[in-house]
Image (cartoon, rainbow, N blue to C red; front, top):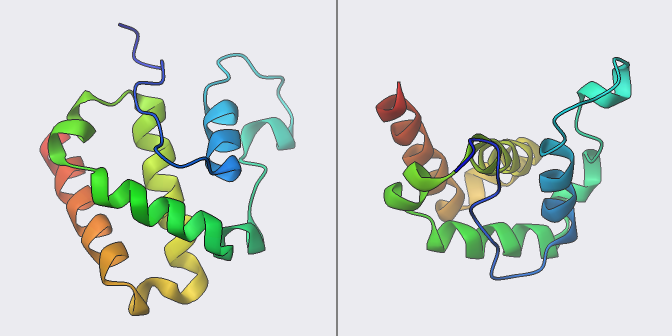
Length: 111
């Protein structure tokens, strides 16, 4: 199994997360500003479908699933948590706080 292959799949169809997976899976990129960064940002991360999809994903996530994930899987998960929490819902969402706290622990364990 290769380190960059997608191993996780969503139970809900969230197009923003699917696009992020597609972008993160590109192994060869031209060297320009847009090719080296995620293209989806801003208000897309406060969309209720994205937040609800991430909440459902968080309910399924565990340390065992995390450990089985590829680098791309773990990047998409961590980036999505970062982007959603960065738009002010962090303080109001217990599920998001728990997901971020668990992810911090999994990252520490991986080091």
